Length: 186
Image 1 (cartoon, rainbow, N blue to C red):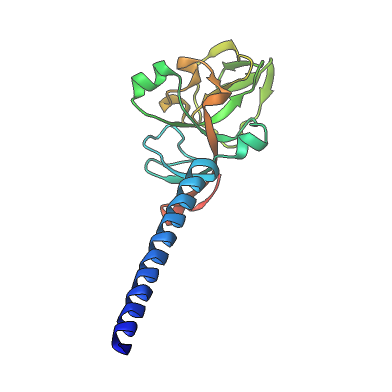
Image 2: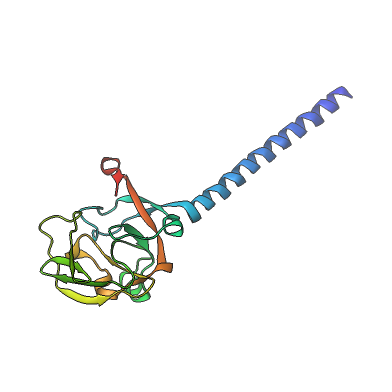
C-alpha cells in the first residue's frame, strides 16, 4: 500500500511540475505580446532612405508608447503606417522617416534647405552635401505630420504622398541594436 501511495504522490508531483511549466510559458507569452503591442518593438529597415543615419538592413528598437504620453517633435525618427497610396506603391507595411513638419506648419525646400513657415531650419543630422529638389510650399494638415528620409534624393516620403495622420504613428525609433558595430542611439 505504501508503494501505491508513493506512486500517486510522484504522479501528482509530475503533474504539478507540468502545470507549472505550462503556466510559466503562458505568462511569458502574454508578457511578450503585451510588451510588443504596447511598449517596444523591433523593426528591420529594408531601404536606404534614412542614409547615413540608418543603414540598409539595420534593426532598430521603437518605443510604441512615446506618442501616447508625449508629443512628436521635429527631428524625431518615427515608424509609421504610410498613407494608402504610398503603401500600395512601396509595398511596405511600415515606413521609417524623420519628422520634418508639425501640424499646421508650412514646409518648403529651396536651394537644398528646409524652411518651416518661411524660416530656415538647420538640419544638423544631414551631411553638408545633401541635395534636395525644390518643393512646396506644403501646408501640413491638423493632427498630421510631414516626413522625409535623411537620404533626400533616395527617399519616397511626404514630398511624394503628403502628410501622415497622427493615428498612423507607431512609435519613435530610439536606437540601432543590430548590427552590433552600429549599435547606438538615434
